[in-house]
Image 1 (cartoon, one colour):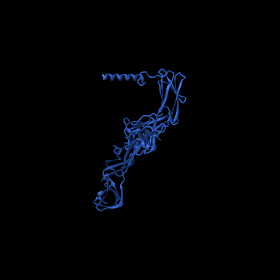
Image 2 (cartoon, helix red, strand yellow):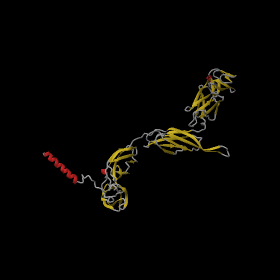
Image 3 (cartoon, helix red, strand yellow):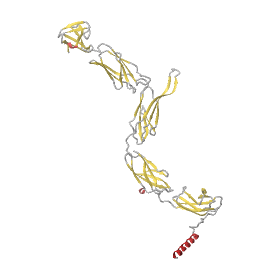
Image 4 (tube, one colour):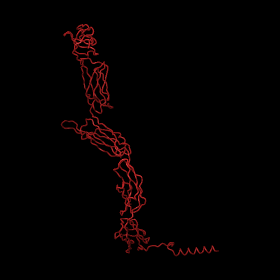
Length: 475
């Protein structure tokens, strides 16, 4: 019975609360149509919030200090966050659309002296030898946040406005540590003191490896303004060399550097694997030119480079410094090849009519044979650039070289070492001139005759002239 009485008392108390308290009332207060009542204004973080009793059938207009800032506002709440300053008194006026009755409220925005919340440094977006791309995120989003001031080792290094969450600090030293402070600032100019700003110590890169070299380079001859000279009837044109290449597929590649034949440098920026083209106007197309193309990465590392050549369309030049000698039955030929980059080989036509090829990198040729004193020997030299498919060889003009070996002059007296016969020709050929006994005094004029150069030319008794075997004469 006592429990039942207690339950009845609780139910009676609750019924009283529901009928007398606004909190629990089922009917919510509604503003009068066409009238704004209970208009209030509050502010926080440079945002003014207006509240009033709104009528569901009305829309409202809002003025600030006599300037319309909103219309067709539904409901009884409006937030003003546009250029709300501090240490200012604002007057807001609100009225229902079509009504002449307006409601006004004043609000004083006290001077804001509180810095915004700190930001949170995050991992850098880029680490380079000479720059760092810093980043951060907000810890708390506040309406009056203006941006972040970045300090490098305590000195101002940059500013990033609201909406920007990264900045780049450059002109740094390679492989060096730096401490960065991230200080938030608000619209009133309040900034977090440097000592209270979050810090981050970062180290620059130490990349000293240059990017890969270029690929797929090509040089081509292009002509412009082609016309026929009315006087000479010759075709005239402006000649150009088109140089194209493909950048390496290296992630940190940023540019190519082209050094022209005159030393001038051109820089071409682009992404990895980019195609590059340069049009060069040479003094004349009929000359050799070389171009150096280097690659550069974001750390400033420069590759050794690739040298590409423009080859003179004409055949290569002739050989020079030709020397032909014979020793112990071997004929030795040496020469200096032309300097043309596209020089490929030298063709030598021997006195026998045989053609031999001496390829680039070898500047001599030898064969078994002899060069007899007094006889003439004809050699012909031609140079060529590489044999092109369908075009054959591209020879230079033939350059003949004729040699006539000379004897070695002696001009001194000697004696025969055995009996011998002076002959009218070397090699024991010809007619007999004079028979000499061992120890005969003779005058040796010269030596080196015969196929093996083993005969001497002598004079005996002032009147007999001819050839003796070298073995029969004492030297």
